[in-house]
Length: 552
Image 1 (cartoon, rainbow, N blue to C red):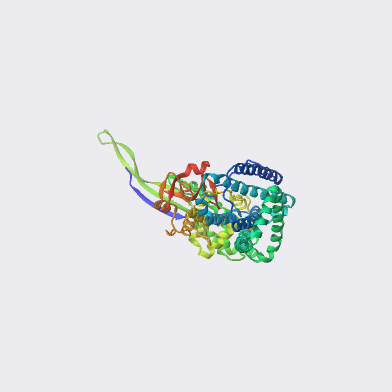
Image 2 (cartoon, helix red, strand yellow):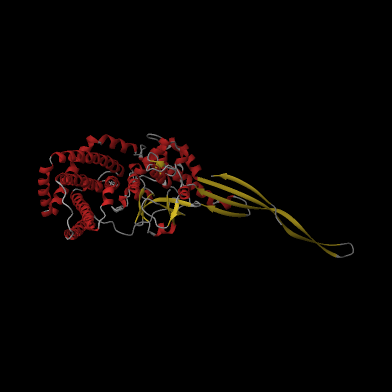
């Protein structure tokens, strides 16, 4: 038999990414692969044209329509050609170009819906093949130029990202204005333009590769000139953004703060390792999370809280506060009233021997030690205002522009590598609703994962990202978590682009733990770390996949 009483005292996981076993491809190998891809897509274009030539031609358009088409195609090719070159110079610029494509697709959707006759299918194939060929050609020309001029790839990830966004907006505006002016000019000079357009088309047909190469070279020159002049047009903004995303403290203080925090963790580890030898309990149970943190999360939090330069001495209080919030140590002591039997033997006056058995009670102490690592990256939303949270997100997106400080951090690979590329089929963009969702979502590719983040200024977590995108595209359900989004969705076994995809067990929480935007063909766009595309057919996502859902 035992009686139990409780006595408790309170005190005081970023997994490491595996190293790749594959050798990184050299610039020369990438250029060679790009050339082969260009040649392959050129062959595909030729086959598509041959198939189209066998079809009965449609009714010949009038001079005005023909002139407008020719002029529009010129503007489209010019703008997109430049954007494709910028895409490969700047990390994550594919999202900028994709947003423009989505807008164009939405404007053309009604026309495509009407023109679904069988005889027009080869024309669509040619259009797609031409687009892919232009992309491949521009990519090859870029890589060949970079191979000859490696200095083109210099610059931090954040500076490239910011420049990309500004260039995207600049070219999008140019495209809209050019299209307006071209349409007006075409209406006034329809007959003359028809003849010129016919000659131009004939020349392009005779020399397709030459024209593409000329345009690619021309646009590369324009791009180089644009990059050199960007110091005047957007330089101040870029410099300011780089400054805002750069740790202001000295290297010695940055490394000193990390060392001080590691010192606190070492003391905690020593305390736990020696716990049984320094305490006097009868029985011990340990339930311990790992003691670990990422240095960039720590320094980004400190830099967001302490504006400007700071020293180790100035942030000692902040370090202690963060440590106490990250590591929650609980020591619970249960006291059991136990007993053992004791026997006494004695002899009476008559010489008889007697034996008496009785209980001897004592206290038995059972100590359970629990350590919870709250995860340092989850703290900002609880301890920061919106301005500080915005600064934290900016620091994380750039790693303070100091990826060299802690190269072993898993964030270095996440935030310095190119985002995962994925091309959305043109047919999916005919859905205006999905096109709008994708356009909005792709604006934020490359944004860092911020626990509790719910808008661009603070960056996002998975559910905050999905909630924000859909609320910008006609829905009005506010900020919901992953489970909340699941609750308002209708489950579907036949997902289509624009539906949601839900997961469980991605971290230690009951119910649905992660959500992304399904974009078709087994892919999603989600707020991972950072926001990017992901292939759902990988073992990790298949293991955690729960279901697909459709918002009302």
